[in-house]
Length: 250
Image (tube, rainbow, N blue to C red; front, side, top):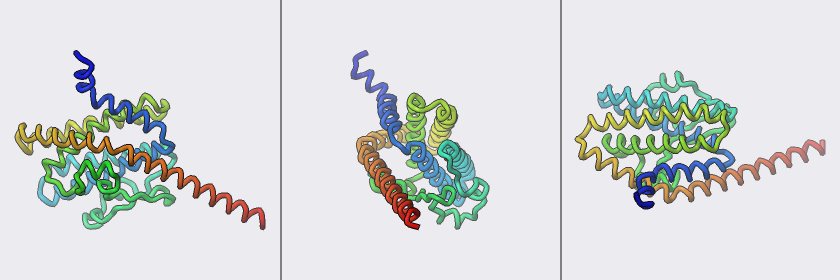
């Protein structure tokens, strides 16, 4: 086997390994994963409601179970970062459909808020992946295809990330990694039931290519995230300094 063919065969593994190493160097890496999982929860929950409204009980159940799983992933990262989601799963899942559709901001201990909705338009890599559209705008076949691709890649990324994080974090991440892999399998099976194998294969190939396009642009987002963290730290330091000066004058 030539080097080129080996690289091609193991492309995703190599990409995830490099990405995991870079990601492990970010100061707020676990907080970013927490927000990512909440964003995925938000999308899955909305899609479950849409499936329910369309009378598709099977898809509604699949997406609702995945939404609940993503919520617990976010809670696991909350525990590791010393924060807590302001709303429990029961409160989220028992909301009326109308309220759940317009809910978009997540709070942690009332000290931090995060706009969980609209992630497909928030980052350059996501814009490239979705072609400038919102994730919810696509057909069910496309949604299941790109969700399968993303969940599979996320599981691979988490597996590689295990190599660079402390053992305490690794235990939680390993369980999450296995669940993400199972999500990918479940979504792939749902896609297979919705369309023929040829169409499903074409859709998977299309979204895999879009994934690689998004990954090419991802460094821009990582730089933006890092700059945002630096600016936040500078502002917090300045605020603390002013507070201390004010206290010393009293």
